[in-house]
Image (cartoon, rainbow, N blue to C red):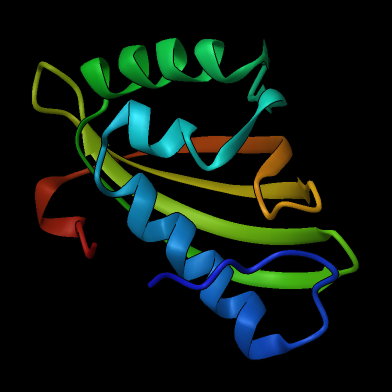
Length: 136
């Protein structure tokens, strides 16, 4: 039986666990599984792209992982309160030409009472790296 971690977030250990669940889910690179953690009417800002609804998230993630190959993500809790969390992250991936990147960013998360994420705002920057500079 899985534990549902839902707001209000008051326990630091549970908040860290919620972030770890998200990291593990994203590292599956399965758009359907990832999108299931969001409300049907979820709202996203990812870089300069704005998405509305779970279906849009699935389509976005399909595009993302078709170009960000061998994606590997690490998330870390920055802070939390009530139904919101702030997370910093980095992920590594390469393009179809074999160029590796490390992407750094911050996310702001807002959760519905069910524990599903209803809003995600992500700011991300990419750094070209060599394969030997990888650490994820």
